[in-house]
Image (tube, rainbow, N blue to C red; front, side, top):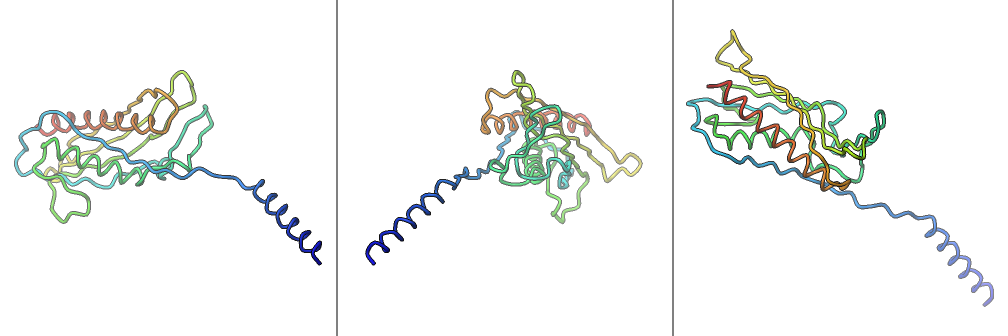
Length: 203
């Protein structure tokens, strides 16, 4: 009886050891947020102009929160373990609202859900948003956004301003942190161009 008990214990120990050999540890999933802050001089707001920023539209390829990489001419991948904290549409809509608020170009800047009646609408479309690693000598973050400003007061010429801006920021290394920093630089550059374009289009 004693030998049978010892045999069973050994069998269970071996079985458990075998299971651990086949087990695989996976990395923890990480979430990132982008912080884009406007710097520079504030303007004197144009009287009674109210801008409502509509929720951004996003290309189907970049709708999700997972980071997207271009690894070759036809080789693309999404990173399950590294993702944005919120979807790109929400992230860019909020960043644009904060940026234009800081510019003081409009008397008020409100989100799509606001009940305030606007004088202008701003729409945005994210066309490209990925890390390009297809050329090891030229790694970069790629961001492309189109904007459309509409003047609700002028039905004969509804489009007050439109522009498409693309930024490619070089990457110092292959880390996810460096890609996030490059995204921040690219978005800040694009919003700076939007800022200047809106100012020129409204004055």
